[in-house]
Amino acid sequence: MAGSPLPEHHDDPNDRLVFRRGKLRARENDEVRMMREAVAHLGDLQRVKGLLLELGRFYNPVTNAPVVAADLRRRVVDLLEAGDAEGARALLDAHLAEYQKMDDRPLLNS
Image (cartoon, rainbow, N blue to C red; front, side):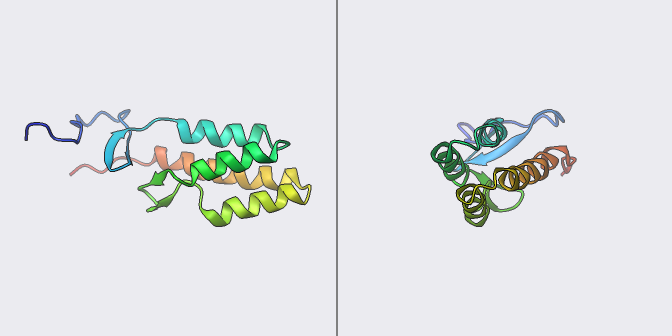
């Protein structure tokens, strides 16, 4: 089909795709970069809030949910407001590790 919005997929195991804003695109590591930035700047509450809010706008097709759900964002912010940066770091590190495992899953051959 000419002009198809979907890119061709040649069964390359390194070709990661993600559904974003209505189109299937090559996976970018923006989500991982933003999560790492949030972990690195736990002392800057406004920056972390902004990063987590933006991550909540990214769609994760594997889980059929946002990359960072609202409840996780609230728990992290609550911990930071209570002065528990290590608790917030542990939550974000665990979430990042789980998110990165999704890239390690084998692609299904149709």
